[in-house]
Amino acid sequence: MSQSSHIPMFPLTLLPIPGELVPLHIFEPRYKQLLQDAEQDDISFGIYFNHEMNTERLGSLMKLESVIKRYPGGELDIIVKCTALFTMEKLNRTFKTKMYPGAEVMLFDKESLLIPSPALYDLFAEYMAHRNITNHFTAFDLYQIANELNLDTHDRYKFLTSTADKKEKFLITHIRFQLHVLKQEDNSKDVFHLN
Image (cartoon, rainbow, N blue to C red; front, side, top):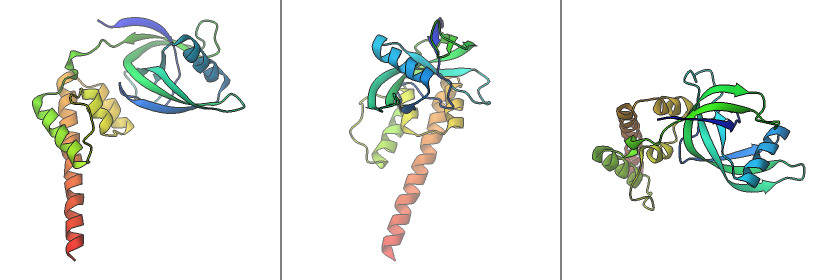
């Protein structure tokens, strides 16, 4: 079952996938306050995908991983990590007594669908080998696979709003396409060297 929560909110045109690390530059006073609270109190916050295509009102639950740089004016360069997904029920101008927004959200359950089928796993291992990436996890979930594919915003949204079986088919299609491109690049290098 989904779980209802009231969380701090940071509307952006980003749609992080669970497990993804995202760099952010924080400069607005309200979001500097949010990150100060996240750092001091170890709280999570939401990045609401603020885009017209977001009819599902989807967002990503984020956790502060590290502060990379602090500027004299209070600005920050940070890394945050997506830990879960949510749908936003209601956006509030402020969160409790804070300057930053808050929202009522329904957090997604931890999905059991995350384990890829043997066919997807083998295809992804072949893709990683073609990219010369050998130092990786021994087991992958669907989100880790999606993160490796560098999906654009439209594809991220399509993937995240798909059903379990469609998520897997989506990834298989994308990996096959990227493998085709990688193999074509290899073939063109061979042709070039023969001339």
